[in-house]
Image (cartoon, rainbow, N blue to C red):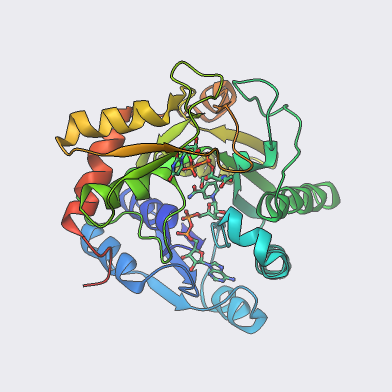
Length: 337
Ligand code: NAD
Ligand code: UD1
């Protein structure tokens, strides 16, 4: 069984590649390395003790995508490739729409041509925008508030239309909450190419002394300690969720959407304290203004993934903090020597 992983060199992609190989799948990866490094795939290969084919290519380049399908017997696609920084998407929206949407259109056109109709797509909790209630179910209103989230919602729509046009497609739309953590080996993890915007990569940089303190955005949210609550999920749990979704798309046809989170929300201070406890690193922080667009709380209702995919997260906040730190302390500069 051969699985094409687009964006496989990235953070979630690399962890998923490792789980796929460990479960006995053959994999083929395409990535243009615009937000990742080849070293991540080398390490996947070392950890898995297995080589696999890698195409250094762009989904926007139809010829390369076609070559991948021509040269391999692909059974299903896990589609991670995309640009993902919310703030950047507000500054360069056209690049986000073009890369994420056109890339997906080209991929789907070639899949159709080669009669490969099984696909798992990386969507995001971002499609819910500012949720009225938590936990957020898959039925909650979809109102993304930035170009990044809109690319995700548009792609969900494109894939739904594809299924309506041809019921042989089998599609899983996975809405991730807040992935953090790293593989327990400390060999692969999150290595943002730019300054980190998200909380955990920032905490990691404070822990290794690259930054002085964490700026905690706001202390007057309507939560137990005034700081924002999110549903952090260990990236290895998330990767395993893709294997469950893959089993399903390979066995059935249809289109389904699943929240992938833990179902439990933690505040910024909860996360910092848990990190300090498990790693024995002091994480200095100060309170600053709220970040524009941030919300009080967002966490998933994960009932559907549990009931239909038979999947649920198993790792707790301490595991996530420990593995994040373990990756960072072993790789001060990420994948760059
Ligand atoms: P990432 O940036 O680490 O990985 C994405 C990969 O896609 C990168 O390796 C990048 O080089 C590649 N890529 C981008 N555009 C490409 C193109 N046109 N052709 C070929 N390769 C291309 O991101 P990630 O955190 O691993 O996220 C994976 C997916 O999950 C993304 O689609 C992202 O939007 C989605 N997602 C991520 C999060 C998160 O917090 N990390 C949350 C929700 C959804
Ligand atoms: C952000 C994105 C969201 C994306 C998610 C995962 C925004 C507005 N939203 O969400 O679309 O799906 O990342 O990639 O960018 N915080 C601090 N200090 C920091 C960084 C964050 O206090 O330096 C706080 C935030 O206010 C929030 C929490 O930490 O309460 C988590 O922030 P972050 O990791 O950026 O994730 P989200 O805001 O959930």
